[in-house]
Each structure stands twice: as C-alpha cells, then as structure tokens.
Figure 1 (cartoon, rainbow, N blue to C red):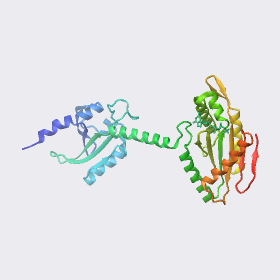
Figure 2: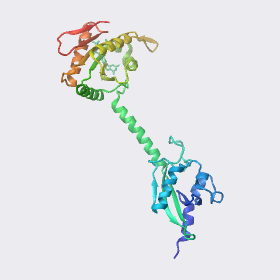
Figure 3: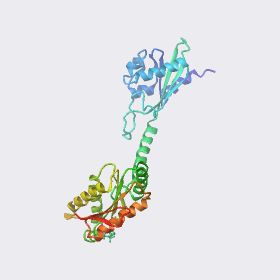
Figure 4: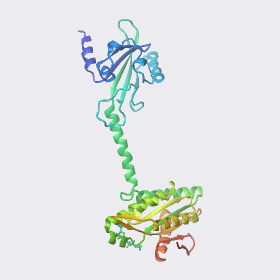
Length: 323
Ligand SMILES: Nc1nc2c(ncn2[C@@H]2O[C@H](COP(=O)(O)OP(=O)(O)OP(=O)(O)O)[C@@H](O)[C@H]2O)c(=O)[nH]1
C-alpha cells in the first residue's frame, strides 16, 4: 500500500519549515509554515533562487554547507547555538526575547528527485525560540546570581567573603611577582550616634552614600569591600605604603567634606583609616595583613578619629598622620 498521500497533509500542517532546492539553489517546494512566516507563496517563488527570495541569507556560508551536502551526500546541521537563525523569520511570541527573529535548528538533507534523478536538498527549519529565550533567561539569572554572590546587599560593594578571597589572591600575586600591595581598613566615626540621631534608615543611607562616593574615588583595579557593619576594606594592588596613605588621606578628607541630604537634613560623617603594606619579603597571610591594618585603624580611633594611621610591618611604632 502506498503512503505517498500522507506527505501532503503532513507537510501542510507541520509546525516546522520545509524548503526543497536543487543544486542551483532554485526553489522546488516550500510548505505552509514558510509561506506563513515569510509571507511568500510557493506559486510565486517556485523556480527562483533561494538567495533572491530570502535576501538576508548568509550566502557564502550557506552555499558551503549546501555544497557539502551534495558532494558528500550526507546531511548537515546548524543549531541556534551556533547561528541563531539562518532564515530571518519573525517569531510569533510576545516580546520575551531580545531578538525579534525565530531561533532555528536547521537540517539540510540530501534527496534525489524520483522523476528527474536531479539531486535536491531539503532544508528543515525547526523553531527553537523557546530554547533560545529560556537560555537567555538562564544566562541573565546566572550573571545576576554571580553578582549577588560577590556583592554586599546594602552597599553593593564586595561582600566580606568575596573580598577576603580577593585579598588572598592579591597577596599570592604580590608575593609571587614581588609587587607591592597595600590594604586600607576604615570605619565610620561615632556611627552609633549617627544611628541614634537619624535612625537606622538614616544610618543605612549614610553607608550606601559613602560606599558609592568612595567607590568613585578609587581605581578600577582597587578592590573595595564591606568587612562588617560600618567597617570597610580597600585592597590596593601594585601600591606601596606611601601611595596607599596618599589615597587614604584623599578619601578621608573627601568624606569629611561630603554632605549627604537625608529627609531634608544634611548629614556629615567622618571615617578613621588604617593602612598597612605587605612587604615583598614577608610571608604574611591575609589575616596578618588585616591585623596590621586593623591595628593602624585602632590607633587612628585612639588618636581622635577622622584621620589616617599607617602600620609598617616590622616596626613597633605607628606612623601617625593627622589631617
Ligand atoms: N544603620 C546601620 N547601622 C549599622 C549597620 N551595621 C552596624 N551598624 C551600627 O554601627 C554602630 C557601630 O557602633 P560602635 O561599634 O560603637 O562604633 P561607633 O559608634 O562608630 O564609634 P567608633 O567606631 O569608636 O567611632 C552600631 O550602633 C551598629 O548597630 C548597618 O548595616 N546599618
């Protein structure tokens, strides 16, 4: 029993595109799916070159693919992951994707005409827009997750875990390549009073404002993180103590002069900063460097706040710098 009659209704209802061309790229057949999506009629395009009907095709690339199908008499395939689409067909989804065109998996299958023995190629176009959109959402979510995993929720600077990881890596790099590395730890002055006066929301506002302001004063290569409540750290790669103290003094002064408007009130804050350098020959761990900067910070607080103190490892004296 012949099943030839089946092909016609199936091709008409198939939810994939079918285009049959010959070895001169002339269209022999296309199904209703292509007629619908490309707004063409088989009767109008039959015998025309596929490259004149679909003007946006990647001609050189597609010709190479089609030639290989004919020469080797084996199918070829192109997935949306390699090339989002070959035929520029609009998809019919609401705007859920950054692309307005249908993502496609395309198979190119070798055929022979049973009437003329002419070699033909059947191009099967499957709509892969759902997979494409899903993949886009997934990539976006992964990027957001990765950022959230690195960021402090309130201030958007690096969170403590990630910042400490970076510090370990930078120490390793500095020791390996004998580059200088400095660390600044700073803490807001009398932040408890600020919280008491302006409320916890006011305190949060100050943390957010200062974190953003201080970020704008740093180089891209500096690593700024929130170490705890109102304590922050800045890793300065390729920077010796002198340079780091200069940076810290610049920040300290800028913060003291930075007015923040909260609920129609101007808030002014100050910070105390401790600076330490990792000396090239030292084999310190990140805890040790943090401890050194913390000691300098403690000294800055003890000396009256709103100032920078530095710690030189190996020395018992702190160098005190007063604004
Ligand atoms: N609003 C707000 N307050 C915080 C946050 N984290 C810590 N704090 C507050 O910061 C204050 C820190 O107080 P202290 O450790 O006594 O230090 P200080 O008042 O800044 O005084 P000095 O550091 O000695 O200058 C506490 O009242 C904490 O509740 C936060 O995320 N938001």
